[in-house]
Length: 57
Image (cartoon, rainbow, N blue to C red):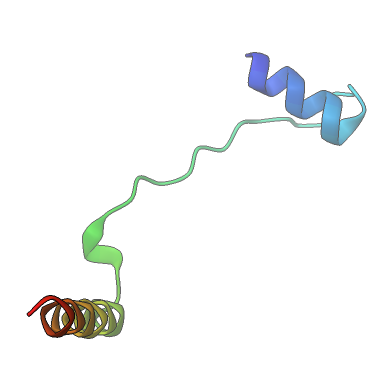
C-alpha cells in the first residue's frame, strides 16, 4: 500500500487516475528464453572458462 501511495505521489501528483488498477507482471519462466539466447550464453560461458583455465594453468 505504501508503494502505491509513493508511486501515486511521484508520478500522478497524488491524484488517483481514472479506472486505476494494479497490474502484476507474469512470473518468469526459464522456458520463455529463446534458444539463441541460451546458445549465446553457453558460448560466452565457455569462452570465460577457457580464458580462466589458460590464465591459471
